[in-house]
Length: 316
Image (cartoon, rainbow, N blue to C red; front, side, top):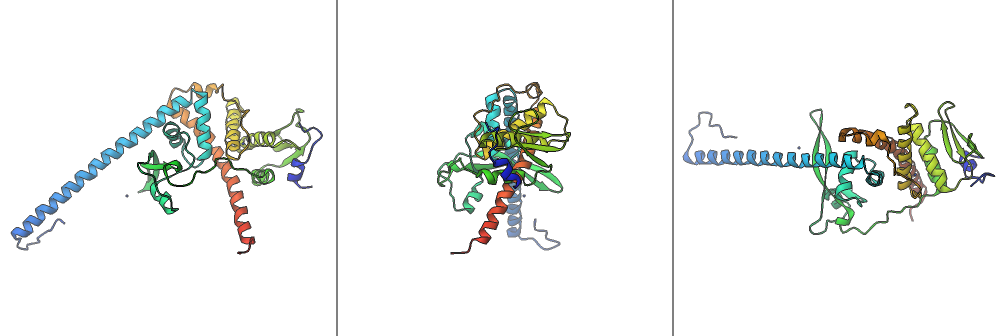
C-alpha cells in the first residue's frame, strides 16, 4: 500500500531606466539661435527630470510611511493581522511591505498587474481606474533600487469576475505537500500522545501523519508540521509554533481548506511588544518566506502535472 493510500485510508480512530561645437567653424546667426534653442531644450529636459525625481521620491516615501504605519497596526490588532495573512496568502511572491500597502489601500484585492501586463493578456482598464502604488525592485549598477509602480486589481479592468474559491483534489494536494518533504513519514492510527493529527518529531526526524482524518484536520495539522520542518533549524519555542500556525492558516486559505477554527485573538508578545515597524515587518517576513518556500513547491507540483497531462492529451 502506498504512503498516500495509507494516510487516506480509514482508521479505527478516525474522528492550509550637442551642444553643437563649432570646432573653429564660423557660426551663423541661425546656428547661434539653434544652439540657444538646444540649450533651452536641454535645460528644460533637466528641469523635468529633476521634477520627476522629486515626485518619485515623494511617492516612494509615502509608500514607506504606509508600510510602517500598517506594520504597527497589524502588530497590535488581531483582525488586521489575520487580514494581512489573507493578502499574503494570495500574493506569496509579494514583499511584506507591499502586502501591507495592499491591506490599507485595497484589502479585497485578488489579482493585480500593471497596465501593460493586463494589456498583454487582452485586458483593458476601465475608465478612471483606481491604482495601488507599490514598490518594485530594480537592479542597476550592482544595486537594488525600489521604484514606485502602479498596479490595478482585476476589478479595475474589463476582465470577467473570477471566483476566489478553487477546489483541490485531496489526494493530489496531499501528494503535492509531501512530494519534496525532506524527512521520512510514518502513517499511524494515533500520534504518540494519543491524539489525531500530524506531528514532526525533531529528535526522531520523522513526520507522523494519522490515517483516515477528514480533509480539514489532515491539512490543518499537516501544513503546520510542514512549517515546523521548514523551520527545523530553529529551537522550539512559542513564537516558532505561532509562525507554523500562521503558515498553516495561509496554506489552508490558499488551497481551499476551511479556516473557520483558526483563532488569532491573542497575538504573541514577541510581536505585540515590538514598538518599531521594522521589527514587526521582520517577524512577518520570517512567516512569509517560509510560507513562500512551501507554497512554491506545491505550486510547482501542480504545474508539472498540468504540463505532463497536456503532453499526454492528444490534440483534437
